[in-house]
Image 1 (spheres, rainbow, N blue to C red):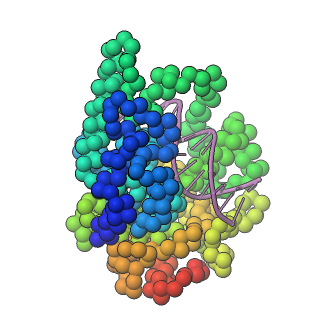
Image 2 (cartoon, rainbow, N blue to C red):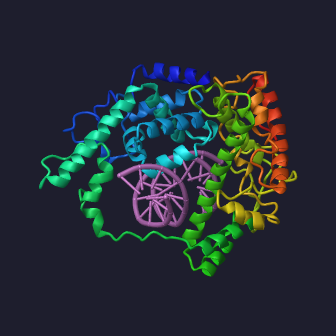
Image 3 (cartoon, chains in turn red, brown, orange):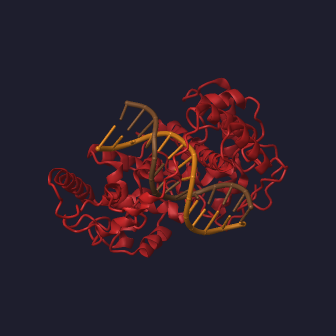
Length: 423
DNA sequence: TCCAAGTCAATAGC
DNA sequence: GCTATTGACTTGGA
């Protein structure tokens, strides 16, 4: 439902059947001969060519709530079905690098948690999906790219600059941009497993270590402090995303029974609620987790945490089953005690997203009626994927807390008043 | 100044 | 050759 509506409205906004590639003058799609002028700046791609960067931004701003999970799912399907790579898709359609695309597709953040900038790729994806011809075009580009590549390889001097759109990804490696070479690139730091372990352990104890702690860690591990700082930033942010996914999946699982396929597939009705609902609410789950730094400095809601939030309330306890993937084990071990400190801060909560889950064409509808999916979203089914009892207990607690929050949110939403997030 | 979000880009792994 | 991972960087808000 909402999906199609979103699509529709977006399309209408754009007023072009295929804004994505089609109109692109600057687009690389065009003539094979055209130097893909635009590639130099990946960030300003092109898809919506007819529109300036501003336009896309406006589009994003006006865009209805989109089901990011569903969109990425469909994009993944289309890409795999047509054997299209992330690089090509990313560089030509989204203006992002392969790594970013991979990340985006694998761990889409809920709409409500995205900033305008973060929503942009999803709007682009949605627009791209709107027109099936776009796939064909991308495939054409792929062919052309391949051709150009062969040409370069086999012809002594390639007469023309290959038009490949992704030239960005290729050209520079070809020495197209000679000068950057001169400055030695910093070798990439690769943390050893033990170092990571140590950092994770430190994280378990203090997700927000003080400068002093960071210093100590850096010394002990023989790393630069900036590396340690970066590591904490990255880890926090990645764990957060990991949780989004987990919640979304938990939601779709518990929902699976009801709807044919939890996935996004065509219908967004179902999942849109997954993603959406989750989005809107999830963040609030962390609200009670106030933190303190080493110094005891309140890590409080720095941003938009609800003013009156009772940060003191007993914390949600468990550090969100922290640790993405492999960490599970690690954290499991150390988790036992970690206590209190969670990487999450209330901040997330209201996060300039007054746009509650309610907003827009949310599937279940903003309104009064509670979308069942909402409730079930956090109701971690007993058996479902439960790894162990403790995990379950933890989940149950979280679910209870989240559901409680959701309940309040829904109540607030149904009042249709500007909501004051007070939790 | 600190942090989150978003991204790049090197690299590991298939 | 492609995707996933991840350290580093940029931007912007508070």
